[in-house]
Structure formats: structure tokens, C-alpha cells
Length: 316
Image: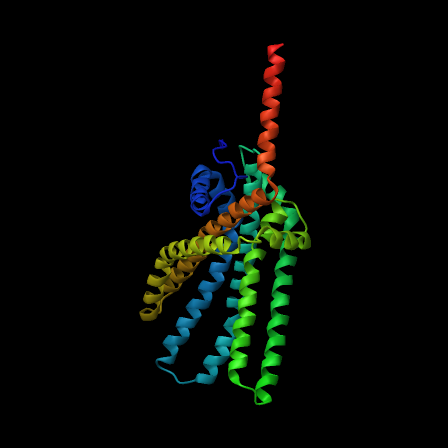
């Protein structure tokens, strides 16, 4: 059973949000790991399996090159193995997307007072948001591709006309700076879709409204949590590093198996650790909603009023 030890709808400063993430994980460790591990874990393992296969073939190619000089054949083989790498990244992207949906669905269940958060409860809340979330992701990717392609065309036109290269360089910084700036408010769209039950486009508009004046604090919290997540993921990568070293010097099925296992561990660990920045963004979402709209305060006032009314009735 989960005891409601942490009130999510509160205004918090940077340190309080940082501490709230780890308090939340500690309070809900068993059900949280169960939900993430059993729903996202299988996808992460599949992605790790494909990436491990890609690694083993790459190192097999390296060993072959030590004794052969068939560069054309090596290039052909490498292009053939690319499918496994692409598959691994597609699975990883889908796993990461469901991980974020599961995290915010879990937080929504917790906020609603559910003391027994199960996989079924998270799935029920999050399943209707899978297709909209995929649509949101494709929308962002498409917009970025169009934006970068348009910029590349303009840059090529500038250079073909003999214009100064520094103008192009400045434009590059401007374009990618704008993309970087926009990605921070867009990180609040999924929490708003799942916790706030909004549509994609409503969530986009609301996210920019919520983050007004709080871009830097959101950016800072996300970067700190992402750094912690990255450092922790390195620990999960140690078995893979060991397996890769073995694979360089030993061409055996055991070495290949160790590489695949190590890759699966990295993918699974990466997904688990990425829940930290996702949770941080979730707490920032609750913080910003509370600052802008105050639903948590209104709820507390309503509960206080009911308690006073009940006490007055008991007096009579």
C-alpha cells in the first residue's frame, strides 16, 4: 500500500523539486519499478538485443579487416547490418515515449489519491494517449526536418552567391538556438496531455503559457537531472565495455553473447535512469500549474471548508 506522503500540487523552488523527485521514488519504489520494469523493460531489452547484434557484427568486421583488405565487401556488410541499428533505435524511441507516458500516468494516479497503483491503472490512464503522443513526436520531428532543410537551402544560396560565411555561421547558431529554446517548453506537453488530460495542440499552447518566466529554472532542473541520469547510466554500461574489450580479442560465441547481454543491460538501465528527468519535469509541471492557476490551494481551501462545516454540524 502507498501512503500519501508527498503532495504533488505545490509551489516548489529548485531544491525542493530536486528533493521531491528522490522522495517520490523512495516512497513509491516498489510499484514504480514494477510499472516501469514490466511495461517498458521488455521494449528496452528488445532494443538492446538488436543493438548488441549490431555490435557483434561490427567487431567481427574489425577482426576481419586485420587480416583482409576487402574494403568494398566490408562496406556492403556494414550497410546490411544498418537495419539492426535502425531497429534498435526505433524500439528505444518507442520505449522512451511509453516510459514518459507511464511516469506521468503514475504521477496522475498518485495525485488522485490511488494508494495501490498497478500496471492496470497506469495502462488505463495512459493507453489513450499513446497515439496522440506518437503524433506529437512525429509533428516535432517533421517540423525540425522542414526547418533544417529550409535553413540548409538558404545557407547554400548564401554561399553560392559569394556571401560571407560568418552570416551562415550566425544563422546556424540562431536556428539551433531557437530549436533548443523551444524544446524546453515542449517538454511540458506530455505531462499536460496525461495529467491535465489535454489534446496535443492545447497542450502545446498551455506549455508555452506555463513556462513564461520560468524557462531557466525548467532548463536547469532538466539539465541537472539529465546529468545524474547520464552518470548513473555509465555504471550500467560497465558490463558492455568489458564485453566489448573481450570481443576485440576473442572471436567466440561466448564473447558475442556477453556483448548482447551487456547491450540489453545498458538499454534497460538507460530507460530506468531516464525516469529521473521525466519525474523532474512532472514536478515542474505541477509547480507551474500551481503558480499560474492554484488548483492545489483551492482544493486545500475546499477541504478546510468541509472540515469546518463538519465540525459545526457536530456541535449541534
